[in-house]
Length: 167
Image 1 (tube, rainbow, N blue to C red):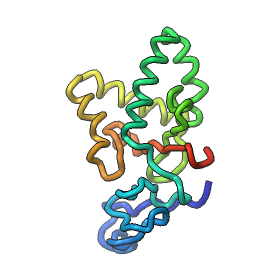
Image 2 (tube, rainbow, N blue to C red; image 1 turned 180 degrees about the horizontal axis):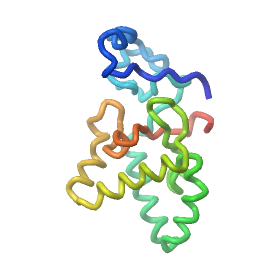
Image 3 (cartoon, helix red, strand yellow; image 1 turned 60 degrees about the vertical axis):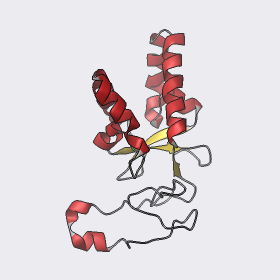
Image 4 (cartoon, rainbow, N blue to C red; image 1 turned 90 degrees about the horizontal axis):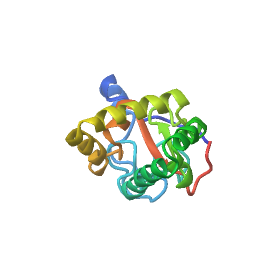
């Protein structure tokens, strides 16, 4: 997949922050990268091969809606069996169909099955409280790394794999 270099941890002080220039060009679009680990212009993920981009909000919404439809169509049991097979690749059934996957932001590696289910559990708990669940889902609209609240908790991002090769 290529060498991944995680952005410096802000808690490590000014020395670590000084390692990343405040203005740096994006290797994909050439414009200023902006804050965070995702280019604010094109969605390129920092430290990953050129062309590796975060999934746009509309694609993530489509994935959520498709997962809901698949849950109904497969009578939940089929979806649960399906997710057992797709979660090893950091995917739900809809993410598999739409060519998206969940990776750890700090390492760039596809999440393990256990990490995927921990992320899903956080998502489930947050959605139990309707207004918090809605706010948590909409979080990616203003987040610099395009993460939902459960992505922040699990230190993950969702990649759009249409133009890259899955790991």
